[in-house]
Amino acid sequence: MKSPIPIADCHGHIGVHPDFPAYKTEPEEMIRVMDSLNIEFVAVSSTLAFSTDSPHGNAEVEQVLRRYPKRFLGYIVVNGNAPEEALEQLQRWSHFHNPPLIKLHPDVNKYPVNGPNFRGVWDYANQTRAIVLVHTWVSDPNCGPLLLAPMAREFPRARILLGHSGVSWRGYEQAIEVAQSAPNTFLDISGSQSHRTILEHCVAKLGAERLLFGSDLPYLEAAMAVGRVLTARLSDQQKEMILRTNFLRILGDSGL
Image (cartoon, rainbow, N blue to C red; front, top):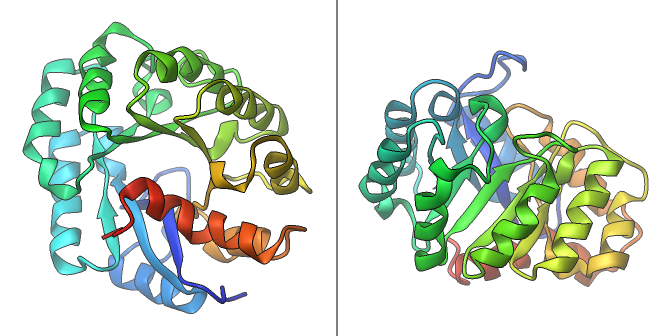
């Protein structure tokens, strides 16, 4: 199902993940998928960067941005287990985008998103009005959505994207609770679970302006993510906000 409007995708990746099939993982293959669905661009983080090697993974993203500057945006991945390296990485790759795009994966790193090693990262994000995409999973001790409510209140200039919105229905409820308490938080609707009427539920609770489209390319099938929005019982205006204009607004209107 092809979108009638160009999509701004807030959540994708570069590289192969061991938990997902190696399917259309090269940037050129991803672009063909994007073109088939009318995805204008995807903001990506490196699988290598959040799994084992942030410096080399972030360098991979830079190469992709140089080759396809109109099709990809780049998140800077930082690891809470290496706080000094994290700040160095934020400075080194600050040219990726303004405001900065930062990706945290507390689950893979086994370090809590609210841990002291991340204080410098959150302070940087607050100072620069960065967009911080955090992988979340329902009630997880390292990345449960509810952990982000106090972070959002303490660092109100950072824009926090709750990656996958906690994944399960209960996770979505936790993500909604966070978003209701902090206006600088947004629900990224990518994820491996699809819940009937969940988008309508989120819009009823938060308004369409707080939801962002994410595909999780190339890990997940992007067509399913697009179809979820296009077939939801929402107005065309609400669908356009989710698919495109919300993320563009956060990015600063220009997008790329």
